Amino acid sequence: MGDSKEALAYQELEDTVKRNEPQQIQHYGFALKNMQTLDKNGELPSTWSPFAKDPSPITYYYPYEKPIDGVATKKRMLDDYKLNNGEISIEYELNDSSYGLCGVSLGLMLPQVRALPGYVVKWCTNVASHAFKYGSLTHTKTRVNYYDELTFDDYLCRMEGRDDFQSMWEELGNVPELQEFSTLLPQKETIYRPPLFFNDEDTTNMFPLYLCTYRDEIKLNLAMVTDPQSLLIIAKEKANGEIELITPVPGTRYAEFMIDGKVVNTFSTPEGCGHYTYISKEERDENWCENNSNCLSFFVDQAIPFSSPNEARDSTVSINNMKTDYPVTKVTWVAELVGNKARHVYSNYTSNPSPFFQNSLSPIAFSSINNGTVDLLKNCPGSITTLHNSSFYNRRKAPIPGINIRSIGVRNDSKTIKPGFYFRNGTMEFALEERDHEVKNGNRNPIGEKFIVSCRIHTRAEFKFTAYPKSEEERIRMEKSILVPANKGA
Image (cartoon, rainbow, N blue to C red; front, side, top):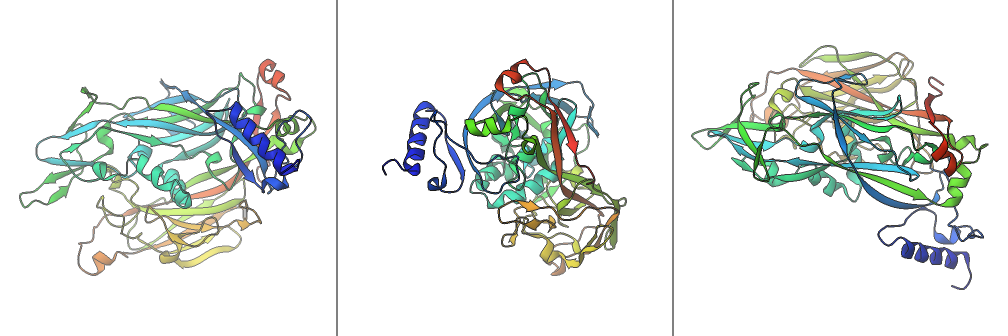
């Protein structure tokens, strides 16, 4: 290939791989032939920042991973979330000398389960995610991102198009040996990846550690359940071979738990792994430039929770007075049987109380959305809103049934989405009715329980560094960086 720019780029890739044998090089953006000439020091060039609004990335990342340890605290409040009985607070410190935080993986060990005589058990759907009731990412005293169990289910549905979705699904505990009723469930490690904003391709793809000092406190804060039985679905064995789902009585034990031959009654603190990255020199130099204000802000996909004030069935339900400080990219909503949590039947947003609800339907027959000014959705059938197209791709059935979605952003030329509307005094209205074919055809008896309707309004929130290091030396020497919300209500 001679001395062409493409040949130089390939040579740099080969040399970089040799210098970083245990690492991988990932290229995002245009073909190598479109790259600029290498600089005089042979450093890999870059023409794009992940925090600028340029849709044409040509940035090189040098990923690496390291263990992170979780520490249990005595906190009973995490942000606005009050921990319930049987939950503990765990913190993971995420700051690092690299340039970006790309993700976190937590290994939750599920113990071997032996059901007591007369019972059979299985783990709930997405058991690894339901061990964590609330989570947030904080920079010093600023909450950057937060989420709950429903937000994770929403996130998981958006990940269905990824090549690694099946492995993500199975790593959450969705495998036959854990999801079929039995008197004995094997010990197995699951993997949970918190749905932090940099996992979403529609915003940015890493948290900018190079704009933080070495002394900054960057933490993942989690509310985690302690009792493994709280995630077990329990049933009685009947004489005819059938099983009958039961609602566990608080304080009653239905199974014994063991890890590596030792009897346990609580989960162990999950082992953590932080996913980090280095980036090319020119990228850093551009972002550390004192006059480059474009790269001091980044955007967060934040899901804001709202719920109906009353439980309902076979009627119309409304959620009112919905307000956002940032423009909305999409809205998701579900109806959940009020007894699901007591039965430990999580991730079930259908009218079927059974833990085998994957082919059932949401009871939301029609939905309407008004942001306080205009109708964004009007009497739309549930058969449409439960088919997902959050990134403007072909509609598809979600892996978790019953999650309704309406994308409000405007698609740009790239994968990014230009946010659409603010909610000033928004209202959502839902018509609930039995839609399940098995019930209508007389194959399953209807349940008389009511539903609670919840929604998540996804906004594109902006954060900005008002004090930050402008060189590697300043990262070491400077006391703290300052990160604050920006342009709220703009």
